[in-house]
Image (cartoon, rainbow, N blue to C red; front, side, top):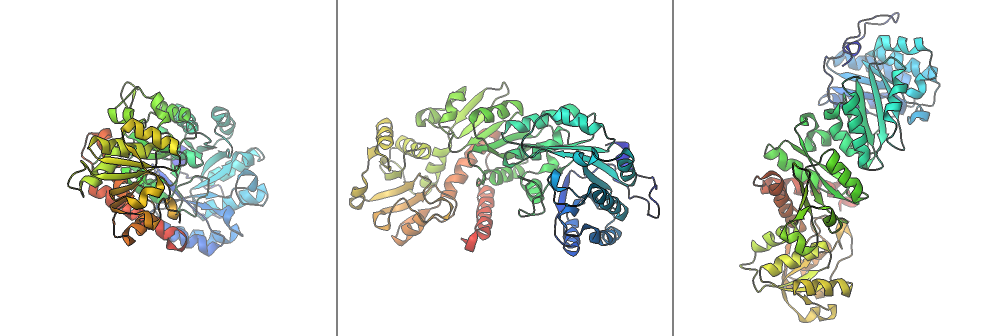
Length: 529
């Protein structure tokens, strides 16, 4: 950290107390506070201060920012260990403050006098200031000079040169990730420049999560996490609680291995929750991220450049990724789909398919044997292929029902399974019916079968969100035993964990964590459904 940022000892502003000192080492995570009224914002600061020693006061969110300063001064009198950034960002720079630059600087100066040890001024304001205006502000607090690009992540060196024209204690550059590779650009920039300058850097947007988690180890002085899911101050900003407890951001270091789940879309995935919990339980120095890849080319750039040690592959890439792998296991080759990739030390990519394990293990716990078991598989996509081939290997009598006949016929031919026509369902009884389609996901009322078509001892739905789908409810009404998709999800994830780490997976902990996450998600959804 710049020595000027470590201790501000000048008292150049008349009639004010000496500035409060910054700690020699700033906390790694800053939590922004937003609110429309002074009392509201101070109450939030009080609540957050219990668990967070580094806060950002977003004065531009207030209808009358000046009214909050006296209360902020009182807050500091009671909280001597809190470090706070004062920010009053103008609309032209992505904030909400409608006043003039002179008013903005006046508010920041008064915030510094009230006790805020850092103030944030955007480059757009700095270019219109006189040098002595910024220097006067900096004499009272550490100055963060910032620039936000809400469209892209580009020209980072050029932006830094513009920022360096103004003396400051921290230079903050924030881009927007439109691809996963933009994170690579930001991380490499921080690695190159972080030793020479006190930088804060990251990418906004859903695809920017890589930089939000990894920027600290690349060279960013700190990062930001929202107070709650509804209080983000930038696109893609995740909560401080997630950063700490899911991603363990304060433990991420140069030796931390990076893993992730890739798909399009990916925001709904619970894989980061379950995998990071498993890493924590087994003391594995690794972090698992949600990677929204719009193209495989973009993903593979990150795998090679960051590097990423392993990925869990979801829709729509399970089949398409095969051509980019150096080798695969027999399951992936036979199924024609891969859901697990390992990056070896030499950079080669090896593919595995753990979906079959996720299907077989729950069934083996319930049936005496799968040999000769009559099983109906709904669907003909990647998950269905894993089920069909896995069950055929164990001698099951497998039937396939799919909306489109051609894919079902192709899969049946390849696996030596049988085709089932929907009108014939009423005539057949099965040991197990497996839904390997996404029908029923996200509390949808749609179901792949009608109640009268369910004639089985067990119904296994691969959809795991919600925990109990409409299909499983219908199955229970028909007297069948339900096997929730969460079991498939946890078993296949446990097998991935074993492949990546060489350690036994903490199955019980993984199941507990994902069930809790589903309960919390259900509580947040409309009507609690």
